[in-house]
Amino acid sequence: MLSPEKAGKEGACKSSSSQGHWKLKMDIKHVKDYIYWLYYQYLLITCSYVLEPWEQSMFHTITVTVFAMVVYTAYVFVPIHVRLAFEFFSQIFGGQPDSTVNIVN
Image 1 (cartoon, rainbow, N blue to C red):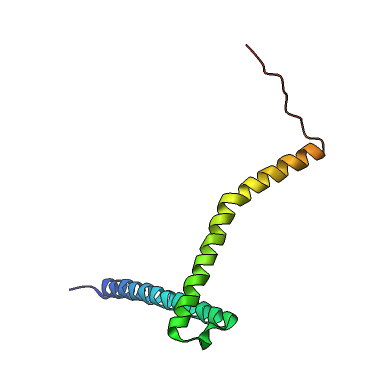
Image 2 (image 1 turned 135 degrees about the vertical axis):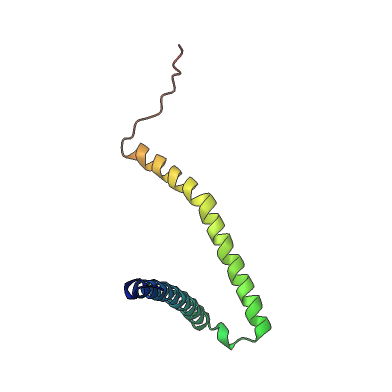
């Protein structure tokens, strides 16, 4: 048999474990509710809640495609333009000019 102290500690561990599980479950529910809330805000902002289901699917497909193209374009071309702008402004504001003489050993 377990002593009252050990039984109390064992029950506390089980209680703590179930509370941790319950908290995780509540956190997941909170995240799920937040995602639903964001989706609802998206429907309200775009006014797509008034569309029929097939129109909504077409609208969402086009929106996701355009968003993906914008992200891809920004990922590929923005660093190039930032580098070119940096070179341009460094030449204007007195950056070191590139030497045209090759150093030969």
